[in-house]
Image (cartoon, rainbow, N blue to C red; front, side, top):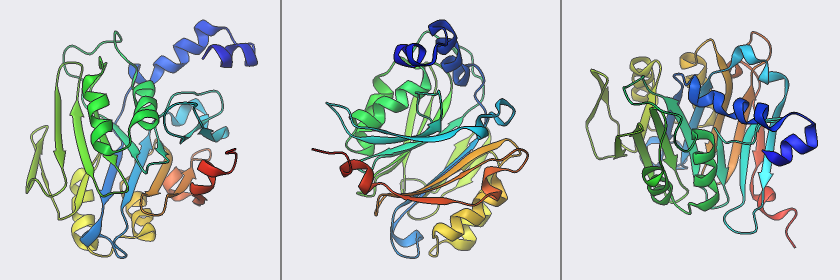
Length: 271
């Protein structure tokens, strides 16, 4: 953040406040991890729908940032010019993150590790989804979030967290997940959650066994909110992503997707 302030000429205090905004105004989003029997080609797919910030005009400055730290994993941050935290991304080990704001329980605080920097640490230091979960569990957390962590070996983990509480669940562990007085039926080799979770469940049941990039794109069109800023589909098997960005009043999920191969990101500038 100090480097961003020095390079841009924007006061560092303003940069700090800007990066605190996600923890001040979290909102519902949607996510999915599907693998093995759930997908058409047995690849591991992960969905991240960001329904947030449409009025900030961030859609004018989308940016994919490649980090190659001297220690830790290389990773991509699917972001915007001027934002150095992570809300969507994937690392060279095939660990990907999705995030959903989750209610407003008592005890929310800013005296902790902000969500965008917590996820940045997950991508930098986690070699597996399990390690990513351990990083989130150990951190002094702020607000209430659901995290989905997938990896290229097939781990699919959902985390329901707040400043005080931490619960985790995995694909194929439960028949029903109880959340906020709602019942989320679970399906083989799938975990999911979202703002329109009942509609999402019906779609997953209908397409189970044939989930592909095209199917996920159609799902995203049906469950994204009006505030949909960007939508990301990760192929954790082949290290590819498909990214769609909002434009003016058109939701990201209604816009064209751009495909990126991330293997080139890990190697292009290596010595």
